Length: 334
Ligand SMILES: [Fe+2]
Image (tube, rainbow, N blue to C red; front, top):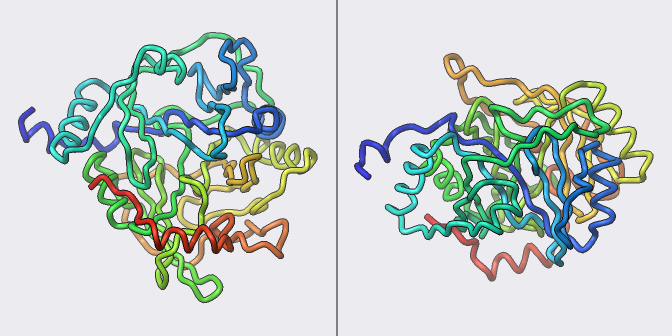
């Protein structure tokens, strides 16, 4: 591949496509995603020890596999076409980042034709695919729909002790652009969050770090994943269903100042948060200018249980985890 091709800007050609969670609480996850958040559960799935859920015509958007990590084990990113994939693979090769192509069985399990796996920052499995398996089977969801198309199925927020390296990874490999920054004081510690967009979605990846002490108290590879509901009714009804089912709200309904999304954060059966949102703004590249905000929320987002310190970070008080991250350096492929 020549350097002109590798240098080509691929902004707008990559979007979040699927997520795979590992948990021993499959029954709880089924209730949470189907009855709480209102996703379509694939009842015809023949795989043992795995559940899969739909949000649109993709055969699978969220998968929960049996296992003990109670964490995300893979994030799938949909790439526009073969040319874009070749550019990405060229950039990875230039940096000696190993790429592994899926077997047919692995691809089927993910609901895609094929995928290419790399070990991303923080040892996160990043899986690149072009074509998803689609289905015309009607959706049976408690939600009227989810916004998934051009901008992908949502976003992820990740804590990092090497935020600049993590940011460079997304910028150098995927031409991510900085949308804006949030700086927030909490309990004497400054939390810095950088919001990166890969397409018109305000952010597909948010990177959070603590300024004064480089601890990562978050147990999971992803601090929260966001999905975007189609309507305000979907948001309010999902909130009420989750409350009725007894799920704890890390943050009740509120609004972010930067992407203007209205959302709530509910604690999933694995302990991390899922953000259920509605109506984030769409970035206009012609006029957008990165700014800095000094609060993560403009209103609301109050914790249901104020004795627990949630703020941005579930399990922020997890000191043991924080200390262990001092001993073990955070992995970065670049
Ligand atoms: Fe979020």
